[in-house]
Length: 220
Image (cartoon, rainbow, N blue to C red; front, side):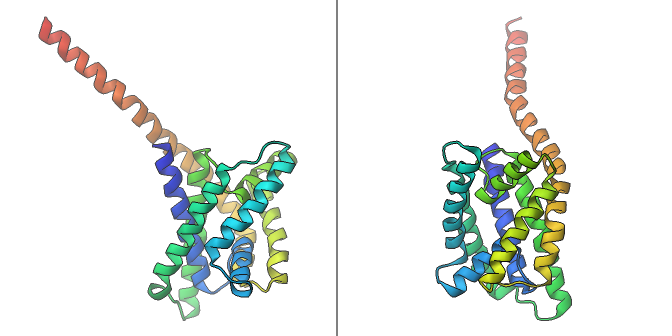
């Protein structure tokens, strides 16, 4: 059940990323970097998600002084596939032209990104390298996710500007609100996930006890 929520969270996250890109108001600094690389160098946005993930896995390994988390590459691979899939599906379905429709599209994407990230992070299974870096910085600085997320976003913002990525008002909003939204959803998704996992873990035992009671009554 935990792995189902892991994959579900990744696809929710990639859907939110695609909404922010389609809004044309400016993607998050990291996603702007991916789009900028895709436009200027080639390959798809999802492909650059995987390539950058490999680099970040190495950086995280050096910071933690431990072996590279290869499973993080699996997460990035699923995320890359999800981004390319959603961008392909949304390309003709969602193309906002008016400013308020762009704002709505971006707002939906920003919230969905926070929800998806919080959902898959709660499974504690192979975080995306950039999210692992967020957790590492949080640990090192002994602060909350809002600070560490915002710090990382600012670094990627500088790189995205250099590469002429899609920077706009949406990028600024992501830097200011991305960590706050993630920090809001973390306890919410933890509560929901714990309840579901606890229920799924106790249900088989409950059914087993019920069958045993029926068997005892029959024998009696």
